[in-house]
Image 1 (spheres, helix red, strand yellow):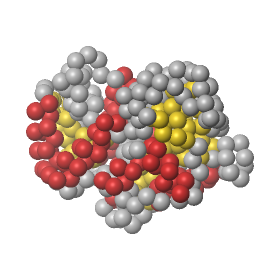
Image 2 (cartoon, rainbow, N blue to C red; image 1 turned 90 degrees about the vertical axis):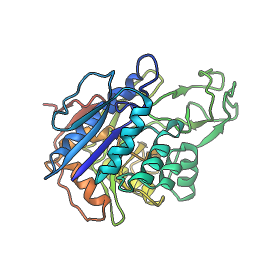
Image 3 (cartoon, rainbow, N blue to C red; image 1 turned 120 degrees about the horizontal axis):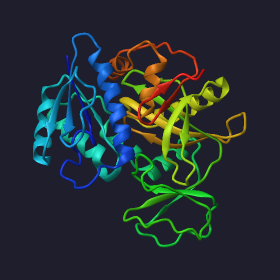
Length: 339
């Protein structure tokens, strides 16, 4: 069984761009790639191929075929070749600039064996404002929000602050800011943004392994975010409080099940409010791709998480056993168990 794992930033998505690669995207991309490729390579009779921007240092992937790419043309050639030769292909790419959507569409034409969500699911969830509107109509709780025009110079006066302003198709907290009033002046952005009410509570995430027959929620995690007004992702830990975990899982499952076409790994970001009945819990966004929580979740089970994803995506029913020991993980892929 040949498996091709394509992670955009480490795999040459910016191979011809001058200057340093975006640090947060590179750190998280590397962590996801190494963890996922390691798990796929551990499956019986599996061989794994990855692309690698030639400017990057080597990573511990000696068990994989690593193809260095030196130009955009070379990268595209290898992208098509490897996906057409693979039994299964998984794309990890950000939503902004339509990168995830366009890559999946391109490879779907050449191979048709993608472990990614449908084009329609990606199109919906890649647009954070459209997703929020859909979820609200489906009965899932989301923060109050409004759409701001590209390069809007002023924040609306009639909106409840504090609030969060973010690109409608952002990823990795890029160009995301906490604003305290309409008098704040976040940097201009050349594309539309969503302004949404800031919801206090516990930042959390729930990942689901999805397929045509089942959508299996994985253990809920607590998110660690920066306190610099940028809400950057630092990592997470197991959300061991049973009632909180149940609330997070219920809301995340409701959100994903309301949108047809979920395949593979899907992540849901939430905020859990102070009310015990969950009435203040909200869905922040849905990520139609692998998220950094994978590096922590794989350490919570003796089962092969990548293998389970593959089985569920191809129509099998799978059960997984997870440990309930305290566990913390960083955005860079480091995992530790607190004493």
